[in-house]
Amino acid sequence: LRSDPEIVRILKEWWQCMPKSAPGGGMDKKNYVHMILAISKSLSDNFTYLEAQASAEKDWIEDCKGKSELGEGMLHDALFQLADLWSRGIDSTEYAKLLTGLLTNITSNRGQPDSQPMLMPIARVKTGSMAAKEDPK
Image (tube, rainbow, N blue to C red):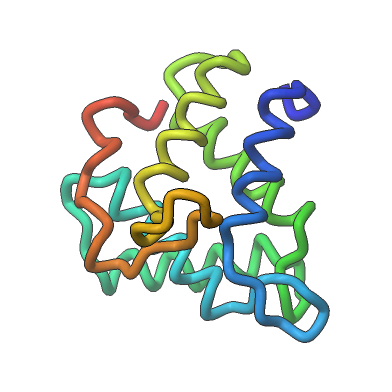
């Protein structure tokens, strides 16, 4: 599944939309935590900022593998793991649907139709917008 062309395309789209401000061109911890908070808020009807932030801090340690920034491959691995946990089925269509839906829910082109979507402020992400569609296994 990880090498399915549609999954690879969507994971690359995620990378393009995420802020990268670390010296090596990757995501720094602040932007990673922001992304995880947005994902958590989109997936949960019972989103609690402090709980989600604590979870994101733990995820950072695991996902960046001791590095000071998260590279593209590391982000792809983290998102694939998320899709594996939250998708209803174990097939590329379900993974693609979840990853595309999440990306749509947490990014915006800010009224500029031809611009690259960017990560939204947490306050603009709808709580539980994916909760009814996806339940963890």
